Picture (cartoon, rainbow, N blue to C red):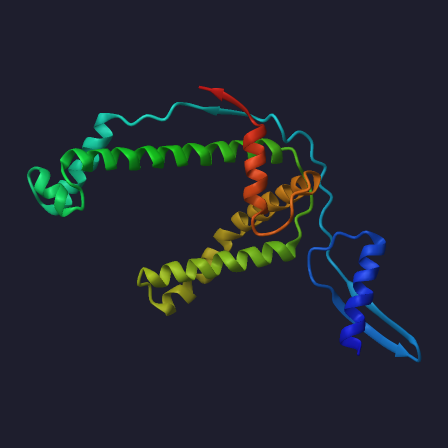
Length: 226
């Protein structure tokens, strides 16, 4: 009965007080006296973020182009890896392309996409930096701890896949935990800022929220060619 009643009463209290909680509550001092149920719920609240300007952020961009030298370097790399003196149509077919010209076109497309993706990431970084640089708010430690845990777990997996022995990973854990903590803190800060923008723009807070908010910020940015 208590398992059913406590969540209902807790949720009513949160709604009544209009609290923006970020973690599950820590329940204590549960008392059931006749028809009266009482308990204490310790919660962590989402910080107050005083957003200023987040639309019309100035971002620089330039036309993406692929230089002939870049294609040549990629072709040279293929020659080195295959230990051959020259590439020809037969070589291109062994790589899955009808001829050398099509292989060169494929390499050009890949370089173009890589550059385009890199520029988009830089623009997104510019926007986030511009919005967050003057924002100072308390970042909930519980969220940082959770994000740090995820980063550490992924690092362990990556090291294991690279063949690093388990005992070596465990020995180095304290080191990369310390190295990853600032990154975890920054990721949480950015997530909270994006969440605040989402609330203002009536964007649902779910797994797709960060991408939807970033798409809005990119659409509303002041793009300037450099």
